[in-house]
Amino acid sequence: MTDAEYQSHDTGESSIEGQIGLDIGTANVVVAYNEDKNVKNLLQLNAFFTIPYSKVTKKTLQRDEALFFDKDEKHYILGTAAERFASTFDSNTRRPVASGLLNPQEAESIEVIRAIINQLVGTPSRRNKKICFSVPGTPMGNAHSTVYHESIIRMHLESMGYDPLSINEGMAVVLSELSATNFTGIGISLGGGMCNVCFSYLSVPVVTYSIQKGGDYIDVMVGRSVGEPPTKIKMIKEEGLDLSVEPADRIAYGFHIYYDELFTTLVQSLRQVLGSSDNVPRLGTPVPLVLSGGTVMPRGSREKFKKALDGVSLPVSVSDIIVAENPLYATAKGALVMAITEETDT
Ligand SMILES: Nc1ncnc2c1ncn2[C@@H]1O[C@H](COP(=O)(O)OP(=O)(O)OP(=O)(O)O)[C@@H](O)[C@H]1O
Ligand SMILES: [Mg+2]
Image (cartoon, rainbow, N blue to C red):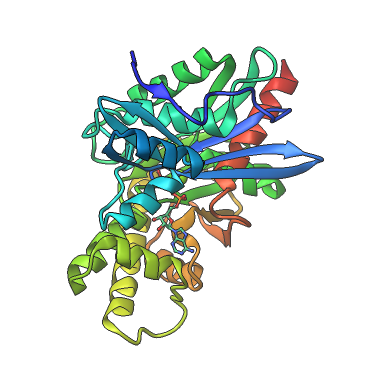
């Protein structure tokens, strides 16, 4: 389908020995794999930026070791380099994934995603190596299907020579963090474009869904409230937002207000979905709830979420609210656990 010419990072053979967990998110693409019995990660921004083609620019990009491909008289700069170029041009990067799914507004989204995957994982060193990738749950109140998104990624991984399988993003969080309760509990990934929820009973994902609001929404709404661009708000947020202290300026007020709003929407969705599902088992004992994803990284997130949760009554009681050990990497780690289990079982 493509006449794109891949540059400096042609798909080489993967240096990863074992199985792979892959998390394709709105903000980041993350890989998890085992090396010397430790889980290792790779991360690339899920973003691109185009500039007009020229031979000089091409040489510069190659020297810079930027990830890019050329198409239609344009250089498509990908990942972290895209952000660097965008800020040089005082502009914003574009996103191949929006609100958790392939971005229908960007014609090149598939090619961009493929190029980022190729660079991160490479072709497998042996045929049919397992790779498990995360997919979002069906968004609440949005008939949008996740089938197209999932199939495009599956087909690409197959064409690279992998044996792919998918896992729900919330379920991946459960596999990563809840081995102590035999994978019973609620896993929530709060990312850039969405929040993914899974209620798992003994490793069976009995309820899964998503809401299409996350960190990006906070950036946009706070930006709108104070008259600043979302990229600036995002930077301030990531550089050390602390939700455990009282807000001292109008941007900090904005963060508190929209974090509260996001958490309220999330816990109300939990009440609504778990409350109306026939699948939730009647449990005598409370279950843990894990929070993961970049959006729970600020200090004080857990306490803010707890306050919101205390305001609703769920059909299951929650024993403990846990923040994942590495919120940005938990989904990929859970996908890796799945890939390893599947390959060992067969
Ligand atoms: N230190 C930080 N403090 C606050 N927010 C952060 C921090 N680091 C990252 N984020 C935010 O986390 C979000 C990205 O998180 P994550 O990588 O989990 O999302 P994603 O998986 O790419 O997206 P999604 O799951 O919604 O498709 C962004 O909104 C980003 O601004
Ligand atoms: Mg995610």
